[in-house]
Structure formats: C-alpha cells, structure tokens
Image 1 (cartoon, one colour):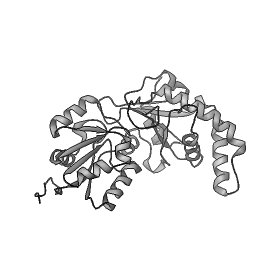
Image 2 (cartoon, helix red, strand yellow):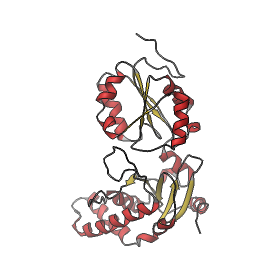
Image 3 (cartoon, rainbow, N blue to C red):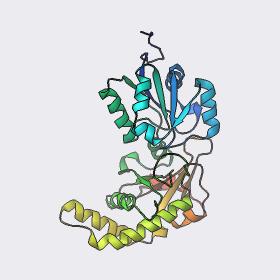
Image 4 (cartoon, one colour):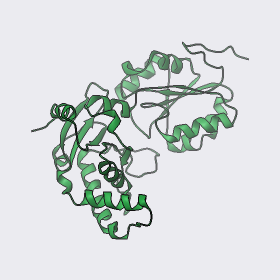
Length: 294
C-alpha cells in the first residue's frame, strides 16, 4: 500500500477529501486546505453551487496542480468519483465551506457507506462572511434561503415565505442569489444580478398574493405561516429594506444598504446575495448606515 500523505492533518493514501475553498481568492484558503489539494492525486472543482473568479482559479491550479471542473450530475451521482477514490486520493474543491450545502453532506455520507475514507477541510462560508461583515447580530438570523430564477413558467414562492416567516419572528434573512437559469446544474451559469432578483421577487410576490387565501390554517404553524405572508404582502415590496452583498471575501467586496425597488438601479458584482433585515438595534442601525447608498 502507498504510504499515507501528510499535511498538518495526515491524509490517507486513497479516498475523498472535501476541501473548502473559502469565498473567492487563494489567499483566503487555509494552508491545510491548499496542502491537501496539492497532495491529492486528482482534483475536482464543484462549479454549480458557487463560483470563483477565473483568475483566482488559475492561481490555485498553478499552486496545487491541474483541476477538472465537475457539475451537479457528477456530484449527485458520484459513481465515477467513488471509483477513482478507491484507488487514489481525490480532492473535491468546493467554494466556501464544503459542508454548507446538503448535497455535499449527502456525498460524505454516501462515501462512508461505500467504505471510502472521507476527510474534510473547512473553509470560510458566505454565511460567516455576510453576518460578520454587515454588522447585524448573528443571533438574529433565521433560516437561510435562495432566490431562484423563474424556470420557464414555474415561479417558486418558498423563498419569499422564508423571508416572511423570519421577519414575522423578528429575524434577519440571508438570501443567496441563483447561479443557474435552467435549474439543471449542468453548466452555463449566469449569476443572478440585483435587477434579476427584483424581477424574481416581483413574480414571487404576485404568485404568493394569489395563493394567500388558499393557504391552510388547520395547525398553529400553518396559521402563523399565512399570517406572516399576509403581513409581508401588506407592505409595498419596493420599500422593503435590504442589504446587497456583492463579491464577499474578495478584493471587490461591496455592501449597499438600500430597498428592494432600488435593486433595479444597482450594478452588483460577480456573485451577489441579499440580507432582508428585521427590526434593528441601535448598534445594528449604525452599522448599516455605513453601507447606505444615497
């Protein structure tokens, strides 16, 4: 058997290594993560849940060796990945933290069930970055969601429902913006811009309004959900306060405290997310004023 490779944390001779790449630049990766990627026999870059700037990806490849891009089918149906990991050490590079998405938790569990050793090197996630950077209390964030593109004639209302329920409970919401207009995860990503997010929000708003009267209220949770959605829909959408967070953790990081309606006029960055803030404390309000766009 081949001798085990060593980083600060010893690595097996064969198996799967899930490596967090951090937010979007090589310098933000941990030294252990870079060492682990370099020690692997094969490196795969998961490129459908988030993306790195190409220049930084090129720098990483120069530092650790050749990297092959994989998309959703290769990760959700990991037969080929596991076959390779039985005879060599395979690194799966994931933007942010490798266990932030349930897709990668499932991959880890499948690998363990298949008898493939799996190691994890964590990275800084968008959740950590946003809550730490904009100045809102981490304790006051509710469930996270993703604003999706309208796929054909299908419009999801669940992201707006998450925001409504969080606001109803006086909790902030981090909403990631979609990368894939097709919803298939096979490539051709088009990261959602602030103006795209506004279009999706307006479609969700109209659809949720049409469905409001039909929402069940048989349980306390169902009644609360309907009341929360009604409370949000009772406000003008364009006046709902929001913080745009663009290219977090990169040299182009930018935050803008604004309103939903103003998203139409804001350029945004390469990758964007939104924070819908609830009632803010004096300290939080002062922190948000730093990012106010006049």
